Image 1: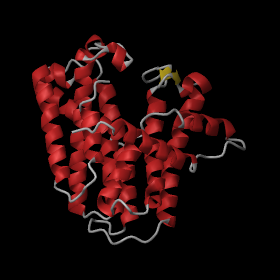
Image 2: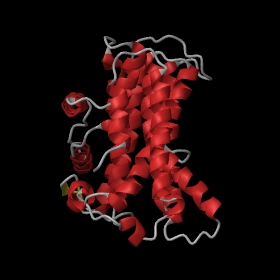
Image 3: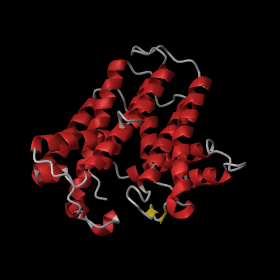
Image 4: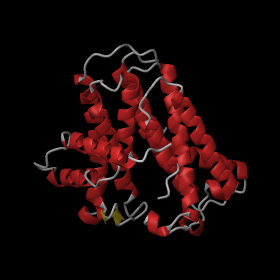
Amino acid sequence: MIGEDFGKRLTERADFFEEVLKKFLPKEEGYPKVVLEAMNYSLLAGGKRIRPVMMLESYKLFAGEKADTQLIWPFMCAMEMIHTYSLVHDDLPAMDNDEYRRGRKTTHAVYGAGMATLAGDGLLNLAYETAVKGAIKGKELSPYDGENTNRYLAALEVLTTKAGVYGMVGGQCADICAENSTEPDEEKAKETLQYIDENKTGALIESSLMVGAILGGATADQVSLMEKVGSNVGIAFQIQDDILDIEGSEAELGKPIGSDIKNGKSTYVSLYGMENAKAKVKELSDEAINILSGFDYSNTFLQELFEYLIYRTK
């Protein structure tokens, strides 16, 4: 159950990350000054900073509430850079062609499509540079019992793979290919939708939880469980988005409802029906929270965060 002061605690964590992020912003100078400005403009657009907050909470789940969190700062910032680059590219005229995000002009609307494309490229590369430097400078960690015994390298592998063609980019590709699809095979359509939700939405959530767990001292089996939790949360989040597109309030959502139907987009609701969609959200949520409750922890914030994301109304 979400506590009454959850919003305050989430804001405090987002504000904390905001201060951490400022330490990793590139200086706007030299010949690449304009693209650096565009990158920083994109990174400082605000938001709840859900993914880095998730990573930090996952880290504390295994390392302990009093653990030194500076170790994970570079990875938190890298995750936000990856997420931000994906938004910058999503907003481009060749993609969604959005002029506003979070109440202000999108990067391409301010700097032009070409510079926004470079800003996205720069953010993705800067993410990896930041994480790699964090791994090089980080304190020595206990051996990991996964395929890679070095926890930093194991975390880097997860971070890069989940963001790439076998993760988020792959999901985005499948989503574009599925637009206005007239796929007659319903089972194939359901399989495609599962892949899109798992990767386009779920991959970065999975990555955030897994990286936090790996660097926090979790075993390979525990990291696999956190990946499952992230998958459930990501898919449930997307199904809830499909539900809100039909039943949500335009005033609360801040965007027109019914766009999925208007654009002929396959969603969990269109393929399974509204009642089944709502039941699936509950099933995925319950399973994720049951897995989480199996760990020995006293901080319920992570569970509250999942419930907040899954059952949101906007």
